[in-house]
Length: 370
Length: 234
Image 1: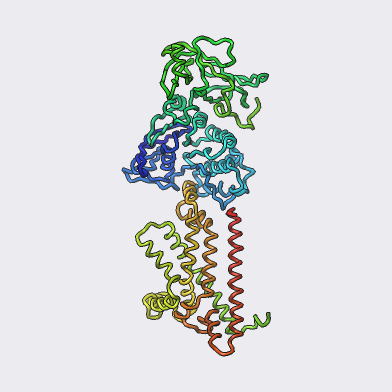
Image 2: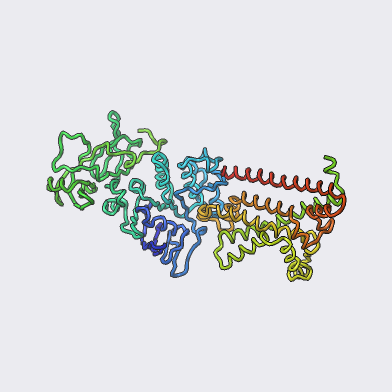
């Protein structure tokens, strides 16, 4: 399964010139607002006709302006979850869910109604009207509606952007389940580092209508210099880890990663569960010798592989810890005082309490057992 | 009450005819009304202003002028009238069908206005969402647009019905005032006022006319409220 996009399009004074290819489980289109993410996803869905270029999904050409091909949206079988849910107000939740299914040719209906309802936990909402649902419930129903049309590809256009933090935390685990338990590839538009680092397998980074980086999440998210200014503070290394054991008396969970063991506040996850964590660069300190008499619990030895000037007084230091890269943002003054240089042996120091829900991700309450 | 309902056969006929003419006029103008409203609300074509003007013309012209124009085009010797009579056997002049046509034309701008407003209020993003779920434009119209504009549709239809119940000038000019064929309530009232001792009949029919119009209005309110509740607009 792959998505290939190569288009150029003008919208008033704004020009989009984008090319990318992704075969990931969940590809994030990531960039500041106004970078052209939504326009791109609208083109994949068939809501906007690009001036020039081609779009291919799963080997099927949907748009090729050169050959005069433009498959209309209702024949693309691409599910879309909009930021504003867009549930049909004159139908019940059940009516909304069945809508897309009804238009799918019977031979191509792979989505199982009960399984999807179960996956999203929307069973109790069936007879309600959309106006009587909370923001989070609406978005879950919208996801279910798109899934039940048995799409070849699922597009999600900032599905969490209009929700508050509590509602976001409510939906995120469902998106993770969607990514892990269904076979549908997902293209996910977002401007939030936290969401992308947690959900995406691949990232396409956009700025001013152009693709400025693309590839696996861990690699792309290390380019802190490319992050939108307002999200730079959230930037940092993305590590794939596994729950080793829980330290009940102290309320902590110990995660194993390539870089070494990490102690984080207790996660409601079983031993062995994979956990993706994001270590914000601003939360990482650097020591030139193994610190003693320090409260921070996570001390990872490594080698400096990159020193990149950042905005203001800061520099970003990349530290290779046994194959996994950790990023630290420190001041230029500190760098000079510690005489940090490429190839230098250092220790990355991270406080346990700098990890929270936003950068570890907590399991579904139903899975909680410890 | 007996006094009110003690109608002569001719008066009863006028009431029945009026209701029939208004109902037919309303139902027959619904499909073209929706079509024209769609064109005006969403179409981008040359001559849109002209079409809009034509639709609204009956609202501005003296009804007698509209009636006379109908007589010229749909009369026995009018181009459209002759064609329809010859090929489809549909005759308008001096028939109740002609009264329905006149009433329909007079109510048309009111109906189109109401429907057009409700179409313009429909969130087109809903239609786009339906499209991504596999519905083609006809299905989108039938399952999304039409239900969402239902309140406007009802309002437009009732307005057209009420207008048809009261139409006088265009009808009497086009199809005259023939008892049992084209004599609607207003024509009958007018006739009563033209003969000595007709006051009582005129008053009876006036009251009936008020009752029917009020009933139509209340019915539309109730319907619109029920649909509105379904849409959770309230």
